[in-house]
Image (cartoon, rainbow, N blue to C red; front, top):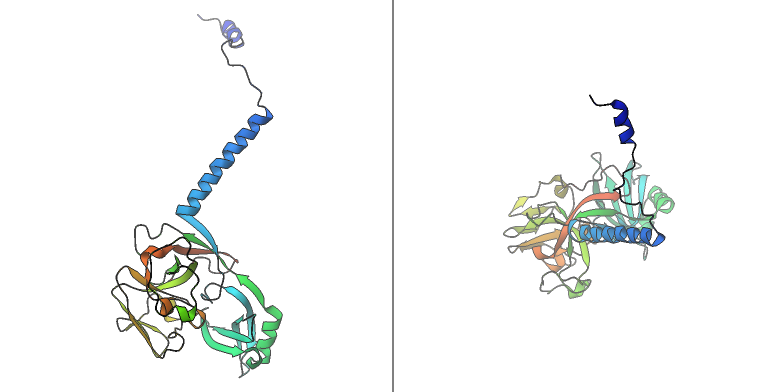
Length: 286
């Protein structure tokens, strides 16, 4: 029989083969931190290049979905004395205000541009008391279109189809080259694709192949206008291209001016508005 006392004594004997404990020096700690930072940097660059990227909305071309301008939101009365929720977008270089009126289902109807002095007194008070710079931040999924094509209603991020920011009177006869890293990045909504005919109707709604676009619903609730100086708009879209239009059609330089966008120019799909914190975070087209 084994002696339990001997077992207990043996278990307390020092392990002569154990490696000596080395004390980490300051340079050792510094190297460990440097290794961790380098790995974190490489992972972050990989994610930013191939997975997701954060963007700031720089202009009001996607209002009221995404804001990037001087805005005021709140309750005001119209000329009949009836109260409504308004989104007012102010031009800081002039006295023009874009007026959006909120509907019971929370979407906005565009009421056009007005001089600040043509607003009702209630709207003027709203504008003067609450105007502020608001720039929405969005998260973009950069691999969304690796394995599938964009769908109607997607908010897409892309390179503009020329080497610098387009100027209206220079954008009338522009050929569309493929993606180039020095081209500016835009955000618009995909509304039509290769093989389709797009038309802006007299009712300021979009028609594809002669049919009113009703799916997704957001497109049917927006208003669209022909390019400045034109009375109508109709275009056949070539294969492997899409039409990218701003939700704020009255203040957006988009495919109406520089034509269909090649799929090669796409950078990704905007999926989430992470700032500011509002009711609807996810940018689903439904």
